[in-house]
Length: 147
Image 1 (cartoon, helix red, strand yellow):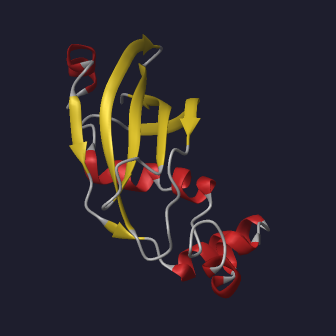
Image 2: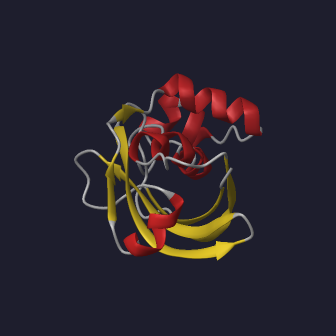
């Protein structure tokens, strides 16, 4: 989709990424990077006795996957630069257990013109394979700039 076509596609379902496993190694690396070593994330033995029965991904780890997974779903054609401008809403309705697989589903909610580009909002839903509730739902705000 080109920048000039984005406004005409507000409300469009942009599709889904492939499925990707959330490994314990990935969770541990995120814990190390963020200094969040809570046992529900990094201690499989203790977590097995906890409320989720296993370790779970950090909510912010799940959130941080959105740009990568979005790149599988949507690549605007005539953009020289894109930036993550922020978030309007973020929720974590369901835990993402270690070893589970996730994918992103995206819907274009809004597009407005800005100097030399557009600003828009995409609803990004991180689905967890086999679960009724998603692991994360976020309204991501982007800016795309033309040449």
